[in-house]
Image (cartoon, rainbow, N blue to C red):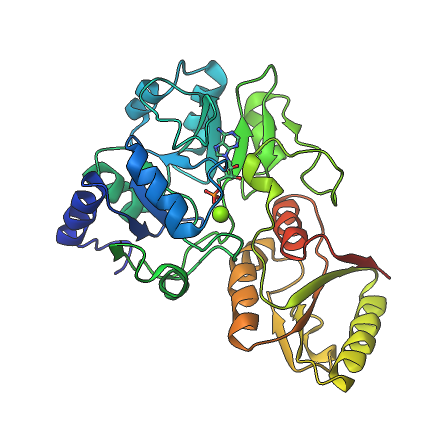
Length: 342
Ligand code: AMP
Ligand code: MG
């Protein structure tokens, strides 16, 4: 199904399933989502169960009309209006004080609610058909990389959801930027495609949760979900920082040792370095400067290492500014904070 042609019968059926308390996995521009009725506590419980997700990890409520924001929040602050104006529909999630209409099951017990308006047309039409409010975390089993194609949704959630809508490849490949608007100054809780710089063009000053790029600082991240191990491939993943030559030398040496012990080795490389590795499986995520491609390819590549049963994986580190910050945030979490500087 292409973005231009959306099968209306399918949309109606998906909407009916969600309104009756069932679950539908669907494409968004960031990653595939696992959708249920955000205002029905039983639907949210089902989402947690299908994902194997801890119930203190709140869900993002997806809307398709700006008018649908006010009923689910206590108030719409000026900052939210401005951000919505610039970035909705799109990959930005805002945290606001919730209204009575949103059950605590959806917000992981919090009095705040995360809201996003996705840009994908299938998602928008499905949300409207479902009644306007769809709670949707990424459509993966908890701790697995988020799915960027429908095949990976089926692998993780097949048999646990009533319907999976195949919308082809996603555009962005990393989850939305999350910005908290409930305290004095706006704060980024999860970096994403919409960078701090872009937000500051609209809001002047935006802070950042200090745990975003740090290895276990002992501090709890402000987005409950950020504390869990995430995005992880099945093999042991290590991120290697350093100059290109040092990184290539170190990874080749380590992989030689692992291969001597009959371990299957893999590398996440860039186009520039792809031919330099002597390992079992080498996968490039794109050109080193092409952040958009790297973002789109990262989760797919992590999943492909699972398909190939790679046991030991090394990844080159990427630059951690702009969208690179979101890429590195996901990568070091996927590595369980195993980072080596050479
Ligand atoms: P996912 O939908 O799987 O991309 O995960 C949603 C993310 O949003 C998790 O990291 C949650 O902890 C975070 N989140 C959702 N609602 C809230 C909230 N009310 N306050 C802070 N973080 C939230
Ligand atoms: Mg997720």
